[in-house]
Image (cartoon, rainbow, N blue to C red):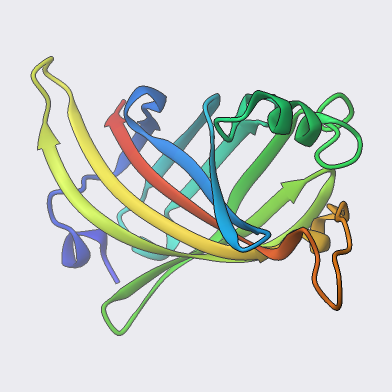
Length: 182
């Protein structure tokens, strides 16, 4: 399927992620509520090909940039108990395929956390293209995936009364990406 058939305004070429207008966020259950956080330092690019299936995306996220709005929690998450940012400073994603199914779009790729690489599939929404006030062309994408943190060696937890634990294994990752045509 050609990119023109899917999104005629999305031209082939490299689109660099604008971190000032993009977000990498996550949600994890903590006790009886969900804690939301963000990574504030990341880079990446989307390379749009004439054929949708040949398009690619790459991203690198600095793990030390985690922000859950609680400095003590963030400091603990950076330690060897959880993310071990001293030994594993980045999380990376690289596509292995792009596909459309029934009007929905999926980005298959390899997610690496703590030197463990596993395949994931992100559900992607294309939000359009627009000219910005500075003469650039921008494209918007939303994407999400749920992972099991233990699959990447993130084992920390605290058992609670009964069968409960402090943290869920499931982590929802959401991306709001604004990319600028290079």
